[in-house]
Length: 291
Image 1 (tube, rainbow, N blue to C red):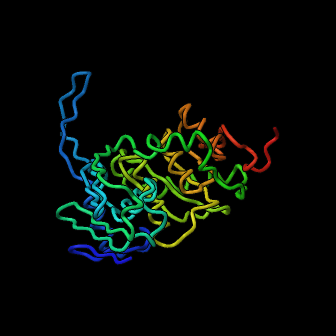
Image 2 (cartoon, rainbow, N blue to C red):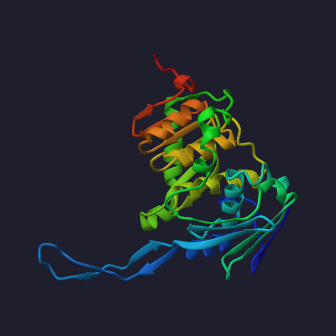
Image 3 (tube, rainbow, N blue to C red):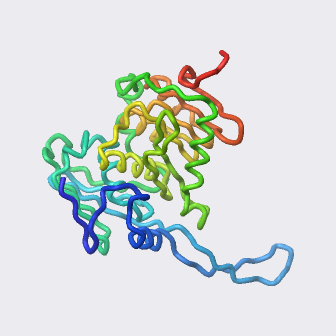
């Protein structure tokens, strides 16, 4: 795969491997300073309340001879977002399918040329909002039939679930500044965070983390993922497509997320915080549980 960026070169490494100036540039792209008026409901005088807000803007991913997608997202780590999105949408099966990847920052356009565009279909031109994803709705039949079932190789102690959620939270730089972003972190059996994504959209954050693993040729199969928010269908769908075995989320799941996790052999854990976690499906992967 050939990757370029105008005006700066694209890095295929995750956030911690990027140069300080690149991190500073991405941080400035991702937040904006505002000067709102804070009022008091008890009659005190209004005050200016300067603070940062997270940026939400459209990024267009143009797949040559396939179509285009407009993603509403936070414009940082966008190359990983594009690759993760293409993988989650099953336009590619690995980075070997990508011939060229380019990012034109000023135009907010990512161009991707695939080795065999016929495998990805054609005529797909859609807008993806920051509040929901596409993957689940299009692949729901496969998900409900269990065709995307994960392997059964991962075992972790319950304490590790909370530990990885805490490590993910510690890396949420944009959330610390704005209070408005979600995060996803891919982790190994020993709790190492392989990749981390942060975005205003929950599904974008997961696609960024998945994309980072793909760009570094790191296997996703047999891994876990920590999520900062609630778990709905599209997030479990992305996990199933990647072969992820454990989803550990800070907030609640939806009923369909539980159903799909059960059918796809994924251990779904929610309310992972403090000294607790609620395991909804396939609890055998969490060591030491008395059932």
